[in-house]
Each structure stands twice: as C-alpha cells, then as structure tokens.
Image 1 (cartoon, rainbow, N blue to C red):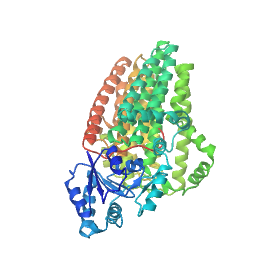
Image 2: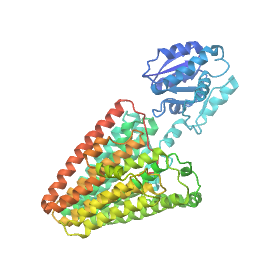
Image 3: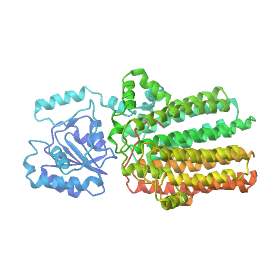
Image 4: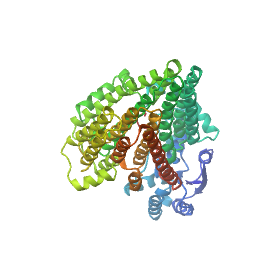
Length: 605
C-alpha cells in the first residue's frame, strides 16, 4: 500500500483525495510541516510515500506520471513529490530540515512539496520530473488562478493523452501505422480488466509458439495460419509495452521477459519453418540456423555499439560528419521512415516473414529474411563504423567493462591474456578478432569432416581471442570484437554441422546456438539493467566463446558424423540447462528483491 500525505487545509470541492485513492494511495491529511513530518515518520520504510499540496489542480494522469512510476526512487510534479523506499532517506532528511526551519507557518504561502523538491536538489538527490506535455499540474495561489487552472484541465482530454503516451515515441513504420493505432485500445482493455504486461507478454509467446507449430505442419493451411498467428503475436508484443506505459506497470522481470520472449518467439518460428519444409522434403535447417546467427550478430552489433558509447558526450551529439548527415536526413520526413524500414526492425521483419510464410515456401521466406537482414546489417554497421572513425571516441571504464563482458571470454582466453600481459595497438584489436574468427570458420567450412585443420585453426583462434581482450576495449572500433566473436563461434558450429552431412546434425546445431545465444542475450539484459554480467563461474562452466569453439572442432575431429550429432545435442542440453536455471534464478531473485524497474524505449529490435 502507498501513502499520500496531503499538506494544508482541504479545498472545498477538490477531487484531489479521490484522485489519489484511485491511484492506490491511502490518503492522510497534515495541517502543517511539523504534522507532515510526524505522518511521514509513521509510514513504513518499505512503502512508497507522497507529499501533495492540498491546493493541487491537475489531471489524474499527471499525478499518475509523477507519483506512481516504479522506475524512479524520487519523482515530482508541481505541488507533489514522491519517494520509493530507496529515496525515503533523502525525503525524510529534506522534510526534517523544512520542519525545523519553521516551515509550518509557510504552507499557506507556498507549496511545501515544491520546497521539499528544491531541498532534495540542493542535497544532490536525483529527482525525476516527467514530461507532462499538455497535462496540467499546478498549485494556484488565489481563487482566480484556481479557476483558470480548472478550465485548463477541462480543455485537455486526460484519457486521450494517456492513450497517446502509451505508444513508443520512436518505432518502426509498420508498428506505427499498422499496429499501434488499435493495439493501444487493446492495452487499455487489458488494463481495465486487471491484466498485467507480463501476462500479455506470456500470451504473445504462446501465440508465437502455436504459430511455429502451425508452420511445422508443412501444409498450406498451416502456413497461412502461422502467418496470421505470428502477426497477432506481434500485436500482443506491442500491447504489453503499451500496457506498461498506460498503467505504469514497469518491472525488472517484465523487461527481461519481454526481451527474452521476443528472441524465443522469432527463433522458434525459424525452427517451425524448417520442420515444415522437412515434411515437404526440403531441408532448410542451414538457412534457419544462418538466419538466427545473422539476426543475433545484428543485435550484438547494436548492443556493443551502444554500450561502447555510454558516457561519451559525443555519442549523442552531431560531432562527426556522419552524424551530422544523419541529422540532416532526419529533418526530411520521408527519409526518417525509409531509414527505419531499411534496418528491418521487428515489425517489418515479422510482417515480411508472416506474409511470405502464407503465400510462398519456407525456403523463399528464409532466403528473403537472410537477404533483408544482411542488407540491414551492412547499412547499420557501416554507419556506426564511419561514426566511430570520424569522431574521437572517449571510452569510459564502464564501457570497456561492458564490452569485455559481452566478449564472453572463457578461461583459455583469459589465462592467455594474463600471460601475454600486453595488448595490441589501435585497429589491430578488431582486425585480429576478425581474422582469427574468419580462419576457424573457413577451415571448418572447406575441410572435410573429421579433419584436423579446423582444430588447428580453433587453437589459433583461442590465441587471437586472448590478444583481442588482453587490454581494455577502449579503441574506436573495439565494439566490433563481441560481434566478431559471435560470428566466429556460431559460424563454426554451422559449418561443421553442414560438413557432417548426417540427418539431425543441423537441428542439433540449431539447438546449441540457440542455447548459447540465450546466454549472450541474458548478458546484454543484465548489463542494460545495471545488474552486471553473469557470474564468472557460469562463464567458466560453459567454457567461454573460445573454449566452446575449440571443443566443437575437437569433437568433429574425433567423432563420426552420427556421434558428432549426439555430442552437439548433449552439449546443447547441458548449456541450456545451466544458463536457464541460473538466469531464471537471478531474474526472479532480482524481482523479489525490489530491483529498480526498467523499460526499454530504445530502437526496435
């Protein structure tokens, strides 16, 4: 239960107390600052508490934005301030100073809540001030000002603003024009029936899995049903985020579920396409695995580039010619949507997959997906490379640590890095990572199954991996190291499974890459949530990226194709069990422990 302390004499006819109760607050009234301090001390430390001026006039949604958002320890709008347990100490300290300064006689002159906000700022506390736009939040000083404020409230449709704010400010073309115009109303319907974003997220996952099952039937009706269900799954995927924004139901667990389920849905659908094609006598497992690898590497490029520029003021300013050109293009309306579509975000990607599934074959669908994702990856990566080269990067220690965590180096690379005790200069770091990865993938693809050349190339790759991470990753292009590692590991598994040439090897490889990719995505989401990387024991237990690459090449050299298929299956199950159990334990514990709520408003995946 949350508590709202209304300060000052109640205003006749005011709806303030009713609005606060509708937002889930227990309302108490304080006559002055001393009374407010006493009531504040009586509120349990594990509860949210708000101080609201009794003369407040504004929209209920303005109060909702200012007082109920779980992402911020301290937040305020004009005439109101709130604190979660993490911000209670700062609020209590500021309140104590106001009461001891004789603020009790000043409540009738100005707003105690606003003075508290000023005191919090003086103390250096970070107070969130939500963007209210056309919403009203005011503390009128006289009857005339109060009447004007009430007229301003009546002139703005609170619910319309709330619905509009439920939609992401920046999203893809397909989502913006074909999904959000009606999914926001579905989000409101869910909110009014007490459904949570996590429940909608789970419904989206189940719908996508059913779609994958329909695709796996290999029949035309099954493919049509799969396409329709995939689109509906995406509608629900948009709805869960809009529901979170509409009702401000953000949580650490919810953000993780949303991001993780998106990947699970898409990759399960790829597997469904492959199974459906196999029923028709067409083996497209290599294409499905290639699509998963390409899409995962694209995401790693996004994550690495963004993490590399955390704390760099130039990253958000047009300080390079490339960034300046990007800014000019964004000033032209049609280019904004063209550029958002070129990168093939999740809305456009899923729409393309759904339509092609319904009217063509799995092979054509996967070919189109590979071509589209390859063009999008080329466009985005080239632009980021140019940005990195044309501005002076200032990598922070936090950014370097994040890149090291994303690299997923195991005991072999880390041990060699300590022995080498020296790094490579400048652009040699990503170049060595690229060359080492290219060598092991090429050797695996061009050498007959069972050869020793891939093992030798993998041993060299272990060395190049160690050289790449021997010093902090603070170079201009060092953010390319994690995606190069991903491409090397996943590409090696794909190449060896193809070379094995035995039925079932590629599905087993698909399972292994999916399990490892989950671990890599989980690392990203922990970093994004400021929770740190997975524990060192987990990385050691599953070998690190270079250890797994070496192990797979050794297994291919020592085993028959049939035995290799079995080994990949066992390895996939083992990795999946270890990473899933630890990941679920971590996120559930973080959620129960009151970890700060997060919500991703970034680029569509």
